[in-house]
Length: 501
Image (cartoon, rainbow, N blue to C red):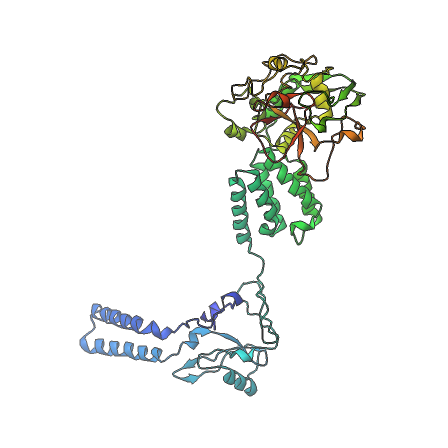
């Protein structure tokens, strides 16, 4: 039985804290020492006031008499216990003084002999209600100012599982702060992805969920984290049932959609303008035309997925950066990426350790895009038909690209090798370059209807195409026709990108 101290502090009985071995409060345990100390103190006051011996003895005797009267009190007058009887009514234990029962105060409720009999019969020596005397109806006993809780609902001799109310606003705030701290402390995309997946269920309140996501988005410049957050916001805006959010009204879905649309709005405009100017100066025009995509069967180092050779027609031109995106350029978008750069990778080296999501979001930030696989090969060949735009021999590659035969085991500064006829540097080696396509298109199905459109998959985590070879690969992988793909969630030390427009 749970007891509360005094009628003003009525016990609020919570099912999850209910214990049968709770120790009742007895004021008699505390009163003796308190009254003895009070008596001694009052006697000292009498002496201090100059009372003579007779008056002091009378004064002290009155104090001890009052103490004896108070010690006769049982603990019940100071403890209000609400009980449920067989009839389902809520009753209070009758206070006792010197062993005699006193009438309990009932505001607006008459005292019936039958009810009193039930109360006396149902109360044991400890003042509790027997287990087999559970009320037929659930009894809710809220404390002063407290919101109603779910009460026990007995049936078939067993109790229903305890149902807890939603967390208080303060508790929700603490949960939100904890989730935000975990998100900010995550160092890998895997950790961030896992936390974001669990966030809707942990946050509970949809409004609190929006607050957590908004603060998280505004506090990071990591492209992969922003991409994952936007993906979650878009799912929220579409009321995705798999998220486990019970109630999400139209207003909250609108907030999620608005936040997803402006996922990059918090990034500095000054950095954006500076980066855009650098990209515009680096852009080279790629003319309209046609070319043979793939490699002939007799080409050295050829793989099966490079055939059959097929003609692709570009009815309009486009543009591509003359060099891959550098560390200095990318760090205008994400200054935190500087921590991932090796000491040998200078500011003018191509950026690496970027996921496909980061590369795509960087392109979106500047109003550009990643090239399609078809666009990349057309621009890299620049009208040539050999293994490399410069010829077929390894010596020809050595003149125009960086690979594991001449790189000194590091990326190299962009633009140091001669460009191809259309003004593009480093299309062979240095770093692989992300393309927009999801997986590699089957050449046997013929040319694409529009070479400017990427080959897409319904799986957002499908592998993405990379082209061009890198500083850690041999000459075979740096050929114009060589095709490869990588997991978009991983940023490797040999993969970078360049932009198209």
